[in-house]
Length: 112
Length: 112
Image (tube, rainbow over all chains, first blue to last red; front, side):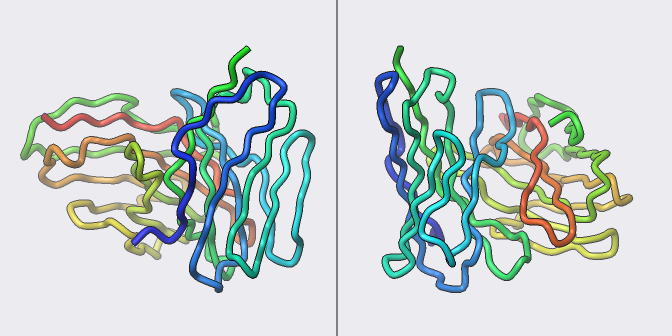
């Protein structure tokens, strides 16, 4: 059973639009929620992360929204650019053990 | 990330063969991980090691074994490869007390 469920599987957005990727989890012991970005031929790299004591975290054009009661979190990419085209993974971990449970990934294509 | 290297980058092998994937890191991190990535399934943890004397099974360890030869080296072995082990394999590292994991460039393994 997948611990973190991610949707959509793929996403096409026009340049300048907003990209939204959603994740849901069941285990309330999770206390760290990162998003990783992966370009073709490369390993994933940390994009942005949040802890459940805040409802939102913003870094540049990237924002995580976190809803603790619904056990959901999402990544918003504002003013999406073709260079944002990549696969995005959400993840969750608990207790500082660094054992991540990843979502299934979303392939984002930003059209010029 | 050039600080985490994986060899080989691509490998084609036959069913029943033994194969070893190697990971080296110059980041000085204690913690190392092996993941496999499959389309639609995201990244799944195979094994992880929090120091040289500590090896732990992940979600999908059956059919795999690992060896932590030194702080900087963590190898993944398939004793008798089978076609459903065809996947993209990633090594990752993290520092004690830090959440971010740093991924290598991946090894694409094909088992015929």
